[in-house]
Amino acid sequence: MTAAARSCWVFALAWACGSAAAAPIHPEVGASQEGKATFYSDSLAGGPTASGETYDPEALTAAHRTLPFGTRVRVSRLDNGRSVEVRINDRGPFGRRDRIIDLSRAAAEALDMVRAGVVRVRLEVLEVP
Image (cartoon, rainbow, N blue to C red; front, side, top):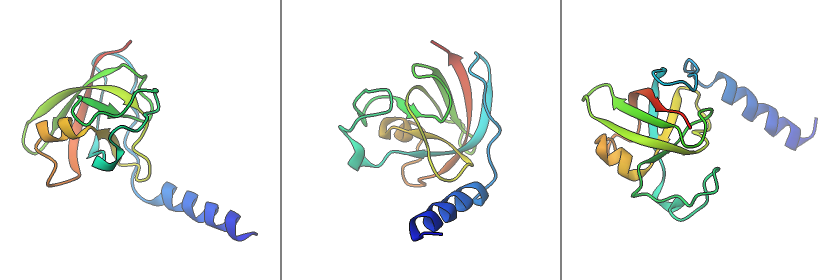
């Protein structure tokens, strides 16, 4: 096995075994999902998202692995009760499977999670395009 192939295998195994996967969410109004939220690095501002939009840290947007672009989601932080509505315009988060959504900086600030970095949340689908 080549070094590159071995490296890919190690990454795939680590990704699959790194943490418990969150239960999937269906793209229908009222569907919910619980897991951990993270937020985008400031260094990504101005870069492209998977939907083709430019990432704007001041917009209330987010990345989700499977929900269709344009889906509106309420994200509620479980430990402090804060919530924010975001629009899905990107894919991710990648890596740990217990992380279910990557939020813009504005959404992270609304949840008061910037200092913590990673928090437990519940997603609720509000509108599907």
